[in-house]
Length: 132
Image (tube, rainbow, N blue to C red; front, top):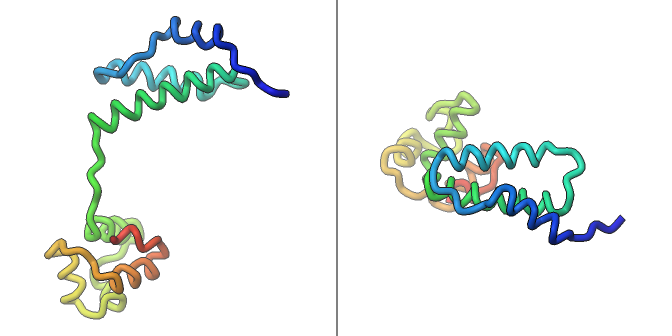
């Protein structure tokens, strides 16, 4: 069965909910609630799918502007991976060579060398891009 777009049905959704750029937390919460309702609705129509996509775009825009996620650095990524695996800095000595090298990564906040990033990526079984 080929689903066809019904402009009137979509227009009815737009008129009913009147989507606009989200300006505050209350509007964001209302948009999230509506998106959740649509997301969990069985057998959504094509028009509802498109409206849901519009809502998600508005929510993501608001949240990226109001709750930016800072890009971490190699040391913060490394600390996170260690925490999730219940490791401490001494566990990285065999990977990076010496305690001094391990400390340099955490204290100096310097970027990792490619070889260090490769070794850590192999050790943690993650993509090297997490450290670069």
